Length: 418
Image (cartoon, rainbow, N blue to C red):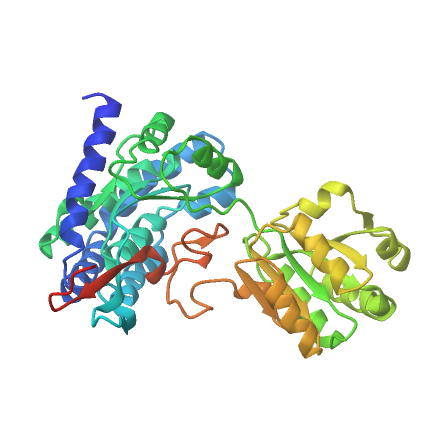
């Protein structure tokens, strides 16, 4: 069977499974998730044996220690995957819920019903635990899912696919509800992206290069997130001690993630007091600053920012700093250089905060808190598939509800339209 035929068959099988999944009860979905969790724990030795093959190949191919760390399925990762499935099983099922109900003048009752998206294709890199996390979220939302992990994790992902299939079939669900593409060829992704008759949505998770490749080739709608160039604006009405704490947390608590702070914008009226304060705190956190001309004048010895720095997602202990005239100037900078991910304002001025929240375009706009809170768990979603910086159909962290959509339903008593 050719690669194209294989991918087409996987997609068609997923479409059939999706029809069944749309009608599955919450209890049956939860039973499947809990069964998979138990089978993962029971099969930990065989999963880790397959994972060891990927690690050995990764070392031979010269992958970095950080990449190998993300690839490794430790006992802790096994427990985390199982716990994650149990947690998702405990979340409220949105499928079938009704909202926005009304009665028309002719007596027709109208409402919106939440339904699964259908078939979701997920393309991701490195972490094999994504295979389980994504499968669990998609199943709970009543979808079928096709998973294509990175070639560096092919043995791990196939081992996980086997236990997932065992779990869902034991629970009485169609085995094709979760499928992992069994070949590492890059061509498989390109073929998958053309199956618009069978697949409803593509979610790429990985570096900017992967996501741009997917967007360029896909004939299927794509939920994308190119990068996280997140800003914090320190207003002239800010509590400066609060601003220092927020800045250090947003930049240094976990610098290699998409919701970490990358550019700090500071109102010119508070620079002389604030910049030395925040510089001292950031230096203790081993953060390197790259400043505009005014910043460098106040903080001799720091690096000068280049035009490229204002668009950089460092994912490292590096922070760009720019002095701005006022909030208007800060918002103008964000409009040009932001990535629609996370933007923060630190101010005690209520009117300014309201205006910033209303006018700044990002999946999360936050007042007087760290950008690090743009996360499904932190925002109360329980779990997330990733963070969307596109607006159709979800904007921000994607939990179970965001893996569904709505349709209109109507109840009548013989009404006809004249």
